[in-house]
Length: 382
Image 1: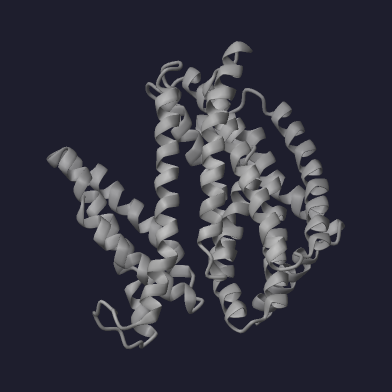
Image 2: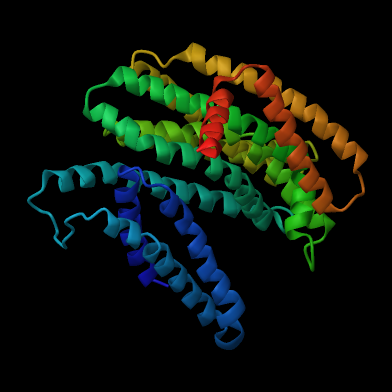
């Protein structure tokens, strides 16, 4: 599996080049090809080669991750050639910006290790419950936060390079407002539908109803931090566009340090309350991430002499009002479908939630809805 690290390094470089040229589709699709490689390893290779088939699947997936993006790179017709770039000041700038990120990643991994160590002392299944719940929380986080952050970063970086900080402020505020309009309903929807979602995805074989409850309990507290995770993703990229990797890393280290303290404190509190203590570890992550998002927002607001707070607040209020309408409709749906098949509950819940929320923001006159609707009309008209 070790060669996959080299392939991912090259693929990440290609992804950065494509994103900087505002090419997002194939870089966004590349992670799916990594999963395809893993699935091939499990289904096709593992029955014959055992665990080695799984390892080859990882290597195949990482290769597909890179190869999928190469045609788009070639179409740019750039002058690419292998060099260490020692005479390029840009290379030294990348190394300077990369160093704090390495420290930040190390601290995050240490935090994961501590949480795993604590969870292993709780009820059997707590560790895997946290892993599965965190993965489920990351699905909307990746779809919302990473999509917005990756798409916005080239624009933010260009505005910084041209000294247009007023335009950057407006772009960043619009990104944060859009993130609120998507992450708030996603958070509430996933909280309400968490049990049928887990049943649909996982409950079979040895994964029984007890396992579902373990994952659902952790997911409840993880999803509470979805808005914070979304803001951290976008604000961190905004700092990177300012050529500042130090600030988000320092804030992240402080947040992860608090996460460790919260993990010990909340897990002990949950235990005393008679609750499953692994939920305290999820709550610790959500609270620490929320504080991290608040710190980054405050510092960015100071850096840019304001951050169009009224526009962001307006979006948050309208998102909350529309989400309340969605929550009511989903509550009625869940009451009516109690005991029904998980696929029906989840599928119908998603459709109802999307329709009610979309109709609500249309009634509230959310400007983003009008922009998207106008774009769709122009696309189909053409």
